[in-house]
Length: 320
Ligand SMILES: Cc1cc2nc3c(=O)[nH]c(=O)nc-3n(C[C@H](O)[C@H](O)[C@H](O)COP(=O)(O)OP(=O)(O)OC[C@H]3O[C@@H](n4cnc5c(N)ncnc54)[C@H](O)[C@@H]3O)c2cc1C
Image (cartoon, rainbow, N blue to C red):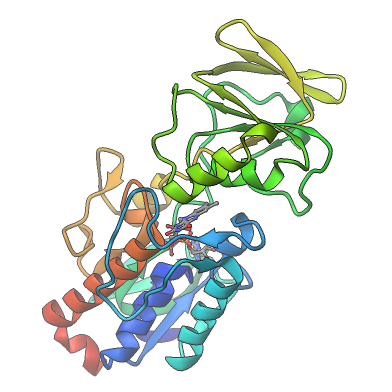
């Protein structure tokens, strides 16, 4: 078991940025624990190849306050950028380690995966994101159609199929544009118009509008099997069958995971102060897990803010 000054959970943009900030401030004894086999696993898994990674996302225009930053670029360029941060700052990442509980012992926390103690850390930073738990609709998805209903991108994108995409955000828009022309694409959104989509994606939707059928102001009440298809029952009485359905509804905060650690909640979000510190002293939450709608720039900046605070409030962290 390792003795650490700072133990970081999750090697996404937030966790990596926190490790970079620690290293740059002279906190040496830091390890990032990542449950998958690679850093930035959410981005690798959910962003389609070549996706544009927008710096200004979901209407947020945050300027950069810390070391990690980026300009709009492709998914592949962004991953290279993160790789360079890891190499330049010699960030230690332990892969295939899922931390699912914390146990306080004197002045330290044990970072535990099941019954195993992976580390003993003075400060803990949690940057595990929200995308392990995609939001799902309130109606049931019958067992017989589960292989035709997706909450993340499958390894192989469909071609020549009749597809329904459900959602009104950037992810739904980007998927619709990606599949437009390759599939018969339908986009269902419960509001009469888009309001959460950024300008670039709106322009792209406009360019591809002849290859996308927009079902705005529509809501689904039920799904059923229809031979090899999925029959969709809309609340206005319309029914239609599709070969695949993609839900792009975002992620949700893993409440149970945090509550099990002893972190308190307020109105469905973890109760943290302005620097990200939770009710557990020296346990900080950064990135998507700490707010309602996250962005990469917010993940970077929240890491900077938390580490700055750690140095001010707990300066002994440098000596451990
Ligand atoms: C399809 C899509 C498109 C997007 N496009 C953009 C965009 O263009 N611009 C933008 O700014 N934002 C975009 N976002 C949002 C952006 O991806 C997130 O805001 C960002 O990834 C948040 O970083 P994070 O480090 O908080 O979480 P994540 O990126 O989710 O990283 C969390 C990491 O923690 C690991 N982890 C989880 N649980 C554990 C555990 N218990 N133990 C150990 N490790 C764990 C995960 O494997 C993962 O590697 C998009 C999101 C999606 C889904």
